[in-house]
Image (tube, rainbow, N blue to C red; front, side):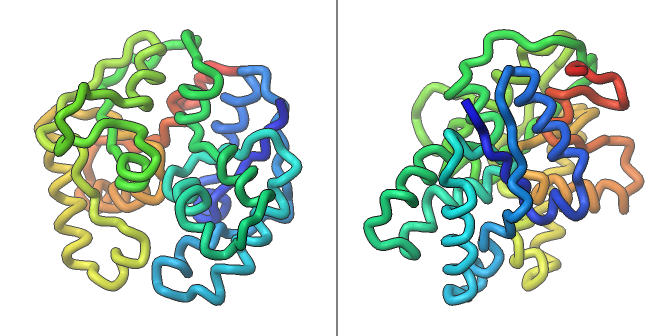
Length: 252
């Protein structure tokens, strides 16, 4: 199995440690991981602001670059949702696009659905609160939505529960938006900040020590608010917890 690792632009530029953590987790699982250097932004920011003409070439470049791989894996639910659910308009009955879209997975989704992991090494003795990002929740179904009368589940929590010592905090509103929303945070700054503050307050009342999730964009937003509040709560991408924290690597 050969996997092409897709690293979102904001992870590449500001949180490269998240990409390295994803790589370490995948290689530990015996996966042959490659990082195609020609990759670019998936085009989601342009698409969200209605710049369709600017999105199309990025979508076509993405499919061309990742077509040779068995799977595409990324530590970002929103970018994978873009590829899987919003690229179709740029391709007319393309077999290459269908191949890539059907084999594109968010990291936790890949570990849970494709590899079906049953055990993970190491310990993480902290109270962990999970933020379920909107794209991962609503478009990738990484977890259950509270408005649906169905058994509750969370693929992220199931994976993390394989690590000894983790205690999960109980949120009052477990699937509420953090307010980031990409360009929404720029166009509607005040609303975005209020929504983020609400999410942080929920984690504070639950006793969260480490806030985690599958989208670094949402975590970036929440981390900024936490730092401004001088909160002791830490923010880590789920890949960082799976791979090890504070230099104490689970996977060497």
